[in-house]
Length: 314
Length: 256
Image 1 (tube, rainbow over the protein chains, first blue to last red):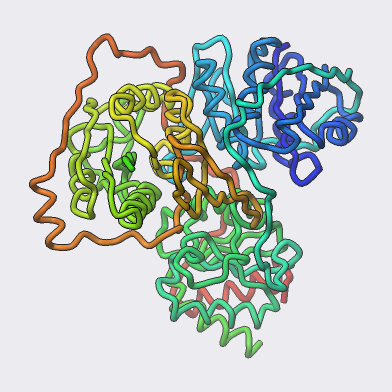
Image 2: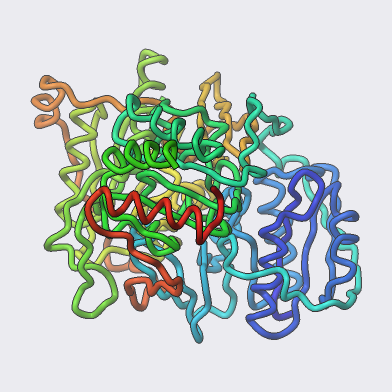
């Protein structure tokens, strides 16, 4: 086996990043098999029945019906040992971050996380708040890789079929030491960021809570919804259900109009699919400008009130 | 309850980041360093747990060259009881597994009940150290904690999942837990704290040559990202900028 992709279930369906990870795995060359674990394994295998893969490996176990770090670390480690894939590939999700380092430490296999692209024999990862790219390589026989959102497109997946193989894995009840309760969602209000046509998004460059209303005023004249980056939510200036990014919503509006958003990588992964990005920021080096279609280097507090005025008059 | 907090010193978000001559990392001589922001939340959480328990010890541990004593001292001023510096040359370790093994070898001697760390560092951003250490020391692990509740021999944490979902997980101690930013409001050091920190111990540990580990991954080169996108820079005075934005909204993006 050349490459094994460890899949993730997102509330019963295949996680979008897992599908992109399969596309990433294909670009490494060689055969690609996938592993799906738990109570959703059959439906996820079904979802992939039209995709060209070597094998779909399924593990079911009473202690790992749904995700827990102890169980996943054990199962994935056992499968790596028995199947000996050269590359172990995953989407760079919160779940990956939760258990994959345990596999890496247990088997002494390096884990190169959050990869955005491949360049010859090395992997490119953003560092220093996405201000620089780093090329990382490994001399080890086996390597674990996780791919950032949108690093690969799942549209490139070749149609075809695969063999399904059920793996028998014995787990001792003492393996799962932690007790995981069911995931839950908190109050989301009536705001639906994911279907908004235009988002006015606020970042830390708005400077203080008293300035937040200008974002809502701009949103009003544009008939837009207001979203925010994490620092603004953490400061308590805007409700958490308006957060865009790896821990918030994943959006792709017609226009993403950002006000003082720096473009930290955790934010960008949640919005880089936007059709147009117009960014205002005082800092000419803000990483948001690398993905912006229109870059306005200037002060939000000076420009936006004048813009609202102009839009009201036009 | 004996708590370790892993703290890293990283370039500040506003710092200049000139490439080093060999382009393997940045030239640190003109970099301004700060405590890695997520680690600051981990430190605060450790101090809160200790205060709530009414007893215990908070030990702050950092790895790096002599410059990192500043963040250890800052943590001591905020209330940590003592510090440990794992000494390193200016060429900081970037292989996460090697970092994890070095920390684990030092933490092992101390028998901590709880290890807290920030979810990732603002420099290399590997986001693995806390979990690697947990595995290497046989501890239970959880990541992205946004609430902690310590109980008898257990800790319950509220974990942040993606897209606004959450989950409670209960772990037996000892445990290594990575902390999500924003779960508390980190304190500033008091004047008394700053004075008191000067008397607190910072133990310097130089790992012996037999502890030298071979790296399984290496950072070979860093570079400034090349944007592939055609970006129009809108410049001028406020009036000209506003006029062009209105034009773009009307004619290019066609949203008004």
